[in-house]
Image (cartoon, rainbow, N blue to C red):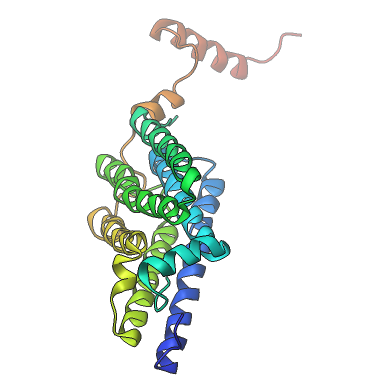
Length: 257
């Protein structure tokens, strides 16, 4: 990278980067802790979890490749210049999306292999995670809407995720201001997408939690939750009444001598 023109902006850039890293690094723990305390994942969309995992893996591949691979770094610099760097179950559609994404990634790998176009390959994963950001939040927002509740979803996770998106985007703005160039935005479109989409969807989830459904923390009972409360064998009303009378009389009648 070229030297920074402004030392305060360089420090601000580093601070935003670490804040984004820390926010996203710990964002998943509040949800895990909440699930453990409730001994339940009711209220958390499993489709959201699956699609979010696919998105995060794609983003990991992109960032790790750019950071650790000199070949990818060289190809990036050649393209963009040396001045920038940057009872629930899974639904069939979410499984299909995850399968298509990883199958497409495998196909792209074999396409890039002969020419060693690794920058193109990691750019594909960068684009994938951007697209997945548009998709993976929808199941959770829709589940909250259907239940009219955010019970089961850790708002701490959402707030940290939102903070990570804000810090991530702010970091890119600071770098662009210092270097008088916006090339890191179109040269890193995945990072732009994940920041903006995260901010947008998290804003909806925060609104659902604090504004739309603030008083309904238990949520509407679902069919599956009602079925869980039912006994495995249901007695008829007459049989149940006889059983109750028998239990009462056994407690009230003294034993015969």
